[in-house]
Image (cartoon, rainbow, N blue to C red; front, side, top):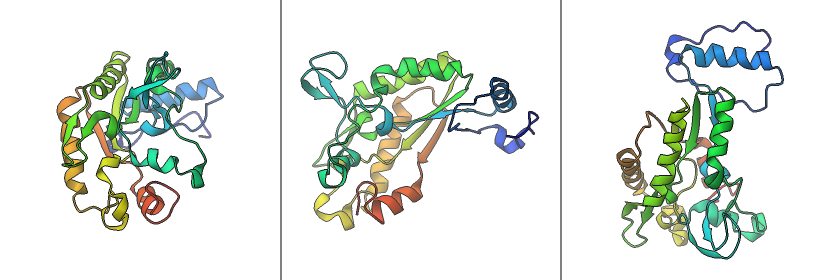
Amino acid sequence: VSCCRLRPPPVAMRHLLVVGLAAAVSDGEMERVIVDTFAGRGALLGSATAAYQVEGGRYTTSGPENTGKITGTLRENHIWDDFSRNVTLHGSNTADVAVDFYHHWEQDVDLIHSLNFNAFRFSISWSRFVHIDPSTKAQTINPAGVAFYQGLVDALHARGIEPVVTLYHWDLPSALVDYQNLTAHGGLNDPEFVGYFVAYAELVFGNLRGVRYYTTFNEPQSICCGGYGGTGAAPGL
């Protein structure tokens, strides 16, 4: 932005315009102009995250948060867990903890509020929200996972922040992947995938209150090219 007078967004875009700022704005006045121009005209201006990149919260432990002995799991496995544990490709790097949004989300929501943003886009971890029977592929809600996301949504509303939910940000549950036959049944290659996704989406819609805006797939080109046209992303065909 090179000047302080910005044109209002087109009418069609005023209903939903989510802008992610890649770096902090050093000029406080410019920051206020941006927020006032977009958010003040009914558009959504905010920040965004992806579940696997920020949540952590993979295990329960005998100590507070991520200390002590692992005693259980807070979500089931997904393809990025499997992919990141490929020692040949990635060493021992995983996002089991990441930035620990799972335990510190209230502080992060306060930070978003302090920037005067009125929107927050986050993704739901499919394998946290539901339990999948590995033999039948039947999906049922995970009450703890639903409670986590509902608490987040409620806290956003309490601060005047609109939740924008991404249903799929690359983290397909491992229970839906046949690793012995990845070419034909490697997640999105599976003819049954559409049915799996619809069942999951219906569980989200039916159990998560207070969400008006959903997006379906984050960066589908990256999923297809990185995960299924190369080895740079999960599942790495």
